Length: 447
Image (cartoon, rainbow, N blue to C red; front, top):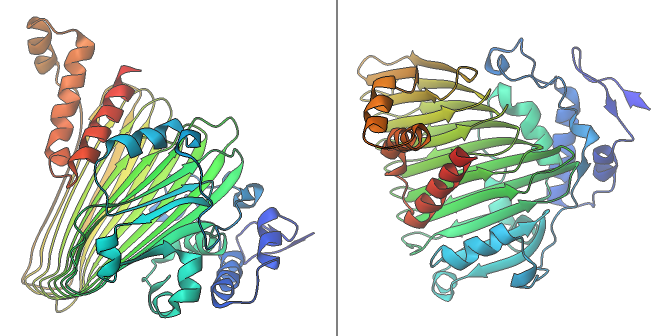
């Protein structure tokens, strides 16, 4: 049995696994939000290629309701021995250095949650969303799903909220400096699954923290869908470093929607790495809401085969004397393709804005393709804003020079790729992660 959605949309099955899960939700505040999100999802049309922001990514065959939603994670940890963790997760645990907090979710099941005693004694809260909804409901009521969502995101954001299967809340009290990174690993092993996770990061005035969100899987024979929402709420003078690392195997479609909200004198540095998945779409928005706020947005991606990567960014300057700097670089081999669409928006009254946007693309094959669409929308008259973009092949003169010095063509190309990425990778705030991502890219080049 089906019922029609709004005009121009597909039908929604009342017997789909997702619809059945919504029907089984309990009566609590979080469930009410999810029911409301489901109603919004049903009422909204799926983005189509007729929508400018989705012109290069086709969702007509996505069929979200065909996936089996993973059961939401519970309040408590279900421990798994280290030897039974996926090898990739175990390798990271053994070699990534000291962390102030660690969370591991296997198919949305919470199997590890650690927080350093010093951080806990300072008032840091790090726990699954379900537990926070009961123990600290004021954080949920004030912040969860509280970001300003653009129309182009609303359909998938509503689906993400309704299908919520995991995630965490990280709260850092004022003037607390979390010494080492907080690292969250999500592993997906179930083919045909819908995984929807959320990261809510609240950092009060004068506090500092670095957060790593990592998404991984082996290659999956049957397609799975991953939805990821990130909300960062900074305090006055706070510093937040956020790293999103996507290393799914083939067979996964991944959609990440990230929103950073920075008040007066708050600094937010974000770094995204995309290596895996069949299709990956990242919508990354920085809302500069206070005077003196600062946002650095960095990203690298490497695609091969027929991978499709789509980045959509917004640097939203809503206050005067704020700064943003975006540098995104992608390399493509095989028949892979990427899209970058970036917008710097400066509101009326946001004088003395200082904003930059740069996208560079390196094509390693004749079949690869990159589309870059930077843009400006400025409603103030005393600003410094610029954007730049390029798409180019490997420089044959440089290749000739390197091969004439004894390198093979493959070695020379690898060297040029890392020279291309070096400007961005050097600005990654966690050295151990930078080394791991460099190794991951190198392994992919060698395939």
